[in-house]
Image (cartoon, rainbow, N blue to C red):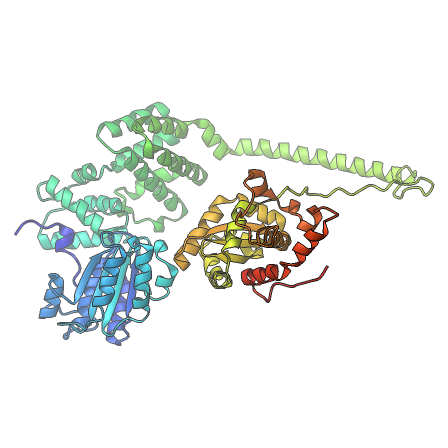
Length: 612
């Protein structure tokens, strides 16, 4: 048989074999023991944390007739068939390559048939967030009312991309990142079983480089075993992961704290000449400074043996810089790390970083000595006393002026005060309503679409961020069509703010599309101008000169498409003051048609007919 990777050979086959997911495994085992098995589950979490493994173990446990304490026996024919992927009733699907509507419809049709060999038919859909909107909608009804003896297990690394309608129909389990201690223990167990020699410091380097993924840790361990001829040494682990030795990090850190920029640059060049990765160097340095910071706060927070250093080293390092200086160093490292992502010359950024961290002025800004603190304190105290003396002098002057009658609080009666028009504190902006976008929505608006949007409005708000929800708190949908929705704001300044916020409009359109399945454009209007805009639309688009429906929706002139909201005037104000009798009769004749058109667009309960 060909060689298999460690993460495949040592894939967990029981819940107790899973590392770092005790809450999830305990809940699933209790559900099997008490026969409280749900029809759909969602396993969400970072890569390599055991989501697919847990799904397969669960599929074996619910179908095993010899299970004990919720664990599969792994000895019966059913368990062996599921382990080898040979049981037809356990179907594993990759949603990244089967994300269309037809594939999900095929699953929905086949799920109706009873299982052939096992007690439950289990569908494991991996990377479910890759499904299209149509595929999610096709899966929705099956998840809500599945056939008997069918279980769906959805696994994803990006749960925020899954529609809320799907999440509300499943039981969600969040898989946590695996700690370095748990990864270290699992690798140590595997190497003991394989009877391979290893250095524990090397295992700690691999565990920290895996960043919470057990599969990543075993993959790196596999590389180290291949590189070092079936043994695990510290130097080999450092080379494979691109990490920097702790002694070089300690030397670099002390030189930076002692403002020795030349020596720090030489140490940094030595690290890069050994083939170390620049990004890995930044990550290791951040982790190193974090350990020093935690040791300063409380030595019990750090497991010293996992860092590759000794207690004496941490005592020396914690005295080299203050906590404020460490905060500033971490901030600088984070900024450089962001800038290094798209560069082909990381050594330039690292040199600039080294010089910046080694500058004496940085330490002086961060923390002042006792003598400088006394000087600054005396200076501040002198400034305070001087200000207090000036305040007392001003108070005395005001008191003398009031006694001499120089300060007049009320205007003299003999002097006629001219009325001054009070200016508004905030000048109102010329809010403009884009009629070019409003009129097409009004032309196809229906009561059914408006009712549908009102039902989905609260769900859409929950999908937005907190600042966006607060902005829409004083708004509501007032008209809707299959292609758009008009939202009215109670206050004009909030209308203007929302109109300028392209991110808000995009988030609203995406949320409505995910909830309704249709693409709709969002248009904003001020609430106080909405009745006038609506009346103007009916009068200008409902009838022509001879009582016929106009075909032209709006003027071609771009200035007329986007007019100020406060400049929208009724037709009566812009019409000539004197009209011919024939024109009066033409206006009275189609009045009933105008009312019928308005009632059809907005509903009879909203339209109110008044005789002028």
